[in-house]
Length: 295
Figure 1 (tube, rainbow, N blue to C red):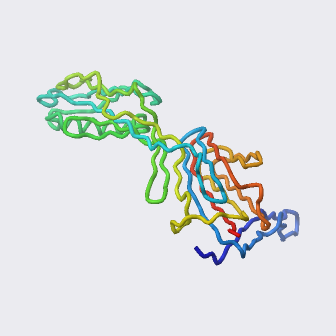
Figure 2: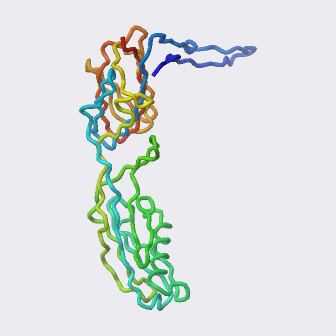
Figure 3: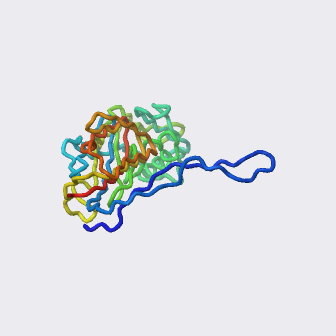
């Protein structure tokens, strides 16, 4: 990797308009942005780190882009629950079916959701299942946590990701822990024709996402191994979402929150900042850019 332009830009300023009679000028508070060029820099890299939850740790050696010691990554999995419609002759009396959904964290749980069904339109268990899935998705409390689909005579409830992040190659989704109380019960409300099913099947257990998923570790943008930095010039932390703290190797603590941009720089080098531990308080998504020279 050959660098041809390496620089940092920094500064804070604001313009204040005068408000007195017969005044027209503006006053600048602070200095204009300044630029520092690093003509001897020959190492630059960037990583993205997604902390899945609280107390997950990114251990980063800034000089080598090594992440040894970081909390291991567990991708997690979406919980899936399946309810089966039994209705040998379809709907035999117009009215509303009652679908009772029990779920931890869902508003109104256990919540009875009514789905309108008719003898003309819902002549089979498959058609009833399709209507029930649509009815569930139309309920704001259910759809806040789940997506309903149908397959033949089954109604499939899938837990939505707790969050999604744009990452190299696509989207990274984080998942909640398994909810042992999740249940979708089917019954006739004011309609007839459905055989009551008080319990649904636990098709796939939910697995909570955990640890730190890191993109770009150990390499530059070309995928080549990083040459060890001898003089560290600048580090930029851009935190998209979440909260936590950055701890340097001289026990300095820097908190961050959603939207934080934290920049460390020194044209003469940052000798005390070689290793970091970034510990989340809540799930977060952070970009880190590093600049230095190898000799």
